[in-house]
Length: 209
Image (cartoon, rainbow, N blue to C red; front, top):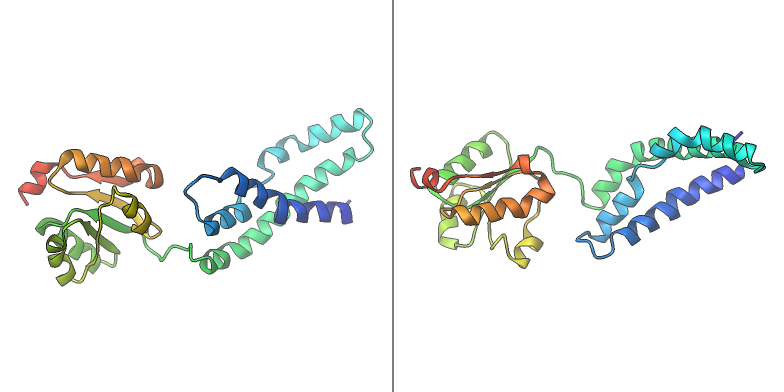
């Protein structure tokens, strides 16, 4: 049932059609060329088509299309090829593009204080990556002395969006003394990490620690 036309069509879908569609769809999006390439390569294909391929092929055959019998094998050729190729190539490609996660999900703490530094030390000791972010170099001094990774930047600024790397971040804790600011931080990171992974510490809790 498989033939050169099916094989060539499958290759076109894998290496041309899907990557081009993803590239066009992400124009204007905040996505790097590496991210576009990875999504274009691993994006799911054939999920909906597989469910209707049999019906569509049969209707096309009844309508008199001579190549209608190729619909079903073509769809499953695409699905089988993507499952095999993507399963073998996803991890190496992600590493090659420097998009692979470094391991266990880390915590981004916005706001350096005695309590957040102690929390960061405890988590760091347990093997969890921690990054403490603050606008004040003085506030970050204790975190640096504790051996924690620090970043001096305004996370809500344009520069902050560029320099804060979320690839190894699983959770965000907004723990500054300003409740309104903490809420904005959570709003900033929720679309990327999910609302269940952004947390806000109340001002009175910060003040009492």
